[in-house]
Amino acid sequence: MIVPDPNFRPNPARAVYVQGKIDQQLVDRLTPRIIALTAQNRSPITVYIDSRGGSVASSEQILRLLQSSNQDGADPCWLITVVTGNASSAAADLLSSGNYVISMPDTSILYHGVRVSPNDPITQEVAFALSESFKQANDRYAMSLARKSEWRFMFRFVTLRNDFAKHREEKKNPALTDLQCFLGMIREKLSAHASEILDQAEKRYQRYDAVLTYVFARTIFKEGRTEAQMDALILKSIISFEHKENKNNPNWSFAKAGLGRINDDYFLLREYLASAYSEQFKRLCDRWGGFVLEESEKAKLEALNESEKMEKKVELLRPLFQPIWSFFVALCHELQKGENELSPLDAFWLGLIDEVIGSPDLPLVRYMSEFKPDDPPPAQPPAPLPADNQPPALPSASPTPI
Image 1 (spheres, rainbow, N blue to C red):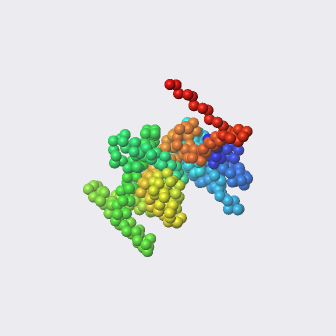
Image 2 (image 1 turned 135 degrees about the vertical axis):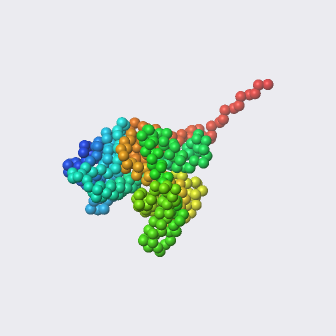
Image 3 (image 1 turned 90 degrees about the vertical axis):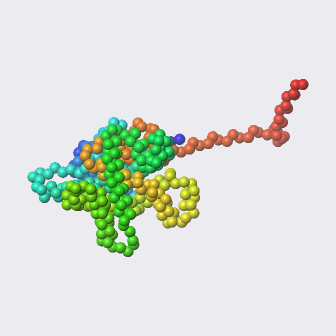
């Protein structure tokens, strides 16, 4: 039996409509409506989106209004975002910011990196400054997208994980890792263009994995060291890695390309450390750990106190969840490159949205919330006793023929 949950059901009576270009005019038009809805009560708000994007600053201003608290410190309203036509650029980011994200059929969702239309001529100095600014902005938006949607991607993983053994058997390769099984199964469900994005993200992830493995094998993270001391050790390992990777290339040098890669690798590692050991990753483990832990592991966890339980749970789940999380970060970075137009099903399997209207066979987190077991049929009353309160006589057995 399905019992509708308002946290997963769009409600036009408590809705705002993001249509056309996202700019200050749109902010001005939506602000009174958003303030009125958030002041009425803290029920979910639906945001219907049909926009090709516009100003990132305006999109973030709309989101801040939607996620505002009140004078009593109440939690923000739960947001249901729905793409009805297009959600491109800043509109795609707004779409992914919902607590539950829905796509109408035959819509388009497009991600790309930061852009600017300068009015003045571009000098070499300005071009360099813009390049650095774009890179930092793209990295920031990639991590923002990852934080907003990582739990969706992890839900895809836990719902497909039971079929990994079957996938290894079909591919005749028992050595496939969980991540390889997961990506192989997703790839079969994607369009050709989305598969290319997945392939590029896999290459980026392999680079991440190589750098991180090398650095962690050679860097001892001891308590008591200053941040500068840790940075020095990390940079030393990264320089060693870059030299090892390129020592056979006579055209390579640190001056030509190596310094840029060292900079990229350094910020990648800092980003990894900040997120992989964060409270958000712990919450990710807590949310989905029950789907993958063995019963014996769950029993051992229950014997621990609350603080030990969380620490042990993360310890058990990190080897399983960390590669999936790291790959998703690589995917979000890849979505900031070029023009990445996705169909609703592409966006669903890549963990960017939660539901596609008209595709009921998809594994939806909504089903987990709304499914309620049917009530058992009422028990039949016992047959009434005879007037003398004696049990009714059993029928006599038929005589056996001789």
